[in-house]
Length: 378
View (cartoon, one colour):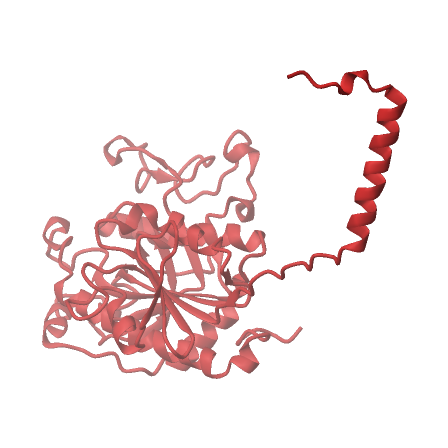
């Protein structure tokens, strides 16, 4: 059936429309305003411990990087995070913890999972203290297996140019060098590299952590006695000419170098020393090598620029599970997988050295919420 509206004069329609509009507006004006629903208050996390891999369950079986934290800190509540393989966990004291996955999933996906956590609208990380933990290879020149190092810098070792060492120019120590540089141990100078950037600060190859906070953590934990074992003592005896590698496990300050590739041997250890020194302007000392720190540091740098986190509240603690090179008289092939006793020691050291710092932050939250320990007053 066709409408008869078309036969109504245009002026009449206009009048009807205007009247209807005024009536509707009057009705709206007489109705009470709909209150604005306030947003749900986000959870302001005080302290979070981040580990990289746990081969089995979080509790009750052979430990990985997270289990001692989960068991001893009594993480009883699990919060699923969309985009993360494992849930965020917390205890009654307000300590949070997360591990990225098992030993076969953690290397390639840690940055994606961290970003998923950071953008979760349920949480507020602007005042959060972060403790990034994990086991590492250790430079035998710097420390022994089982030792723990608080980092002042996290250096990225993935982005570079590489030649096969059998094909390098005469006089080069190895075939790894910075993009834009003319040789190893030189900073980039080419205007066609890195989109023309030669300022090392813009290249984010090295993330400088809060030196004062790292020093504060070190001062608190430097005298902690890390458990030793007969096997560790036996292994240390082989390190003739490396006095720090022969010491019982101890706490120190030193930098962490992250690369996705698992390298090993004296040649690459020398490269790591040089690379850390190069990108920290000679201020950093290579101590620990791992496969995740550079990716996590990159995400935190982005989050800091977006105002999601405070970069002055980031701590990195790495513990030594194995040397980055073999002892004298042993081949790299024979030593590359020698982590048995060292892993157990490193898992234990990670908790023993990290826990006092975490507890100090939580127990003194009224002070440290707005004042970062170790920082100079503004």
